[in-house]
Image (cartoon, rainbow, N blue to C red; front, side):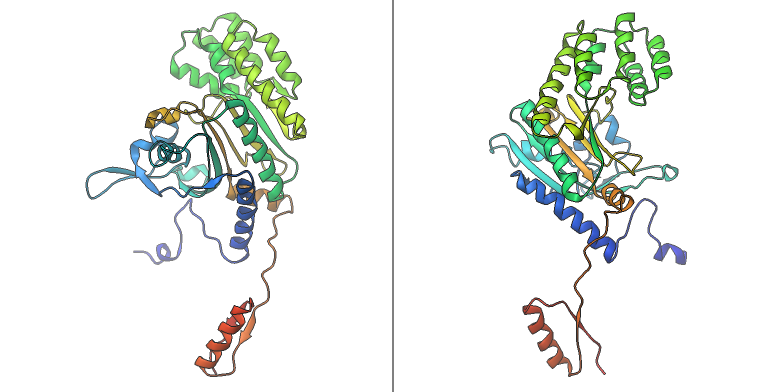
Length: 368
């Protein structure tokens, strides 16, 4: 084994020491304090589970799987949501809905070496399983905003969309799944030329094509939803999705969160289990989202407990980077350590424990 492989960490993983670690723990503590303040309960799910728990196009290709000694195909968790859905349907099956659960920990995903992305990610998030859908959507968005505020992030916005608008417009069109996915990607990228080409290849009828082309441009304040409601009047499912967004946006505005919310009807991508409202959190100083989430009403049915559900996560790595770039990321300095030295081992250790009992931070020095 080459010497350098013994002291280097693999690509995509990280190591934090001292102030870096303290800064991350401080951010985590602030965010989890918000989760606790909204009466969410902590859950610590397993690091790995059966691989089929994480099935789906968005996760399977990024999952580290392995065969256990009994022949079972297992996988390291690439996300928390699927695991929590399984636990809610199994171990927590007797608990009445809604369940409010939060988590904090690592997920592991395969990323190509040249992608420049981390394979080991630390996530903090929560899931609201069951209960009223609109209230759940509004609650989760309010918690996401408060979490970013508590962490110290400035100039952030929650870009909110609804996958039901895009899906509703195309519902009655005979479009191949691969073409739908290609079109979704172009809408998400705000690539009007690419959207036009994808629509032509898929032979989408003109009225629907015109509506889909508008999605990438429909972003801004709540007035965007009024425009969308008129533009999509021909599509009942799209109009219903817009109405849901209008109700949630109105509630957030009444709660003083309107400056933190941007409507973006081009926000249509996401893991394949999203079914309704979706959002991502952006902030000045970072060219990519710091977190996001959405509604996934069909996922728990896979595990035998159909429940509507919504959740979100913040990436601790990205949040720490954001705060650093905004000049808000310094950790509180550790208290100065008292040095205990001068006597024999027994005497120094006795005095060290006495000082620790009094709450002091101590450093036990080497002997003479």
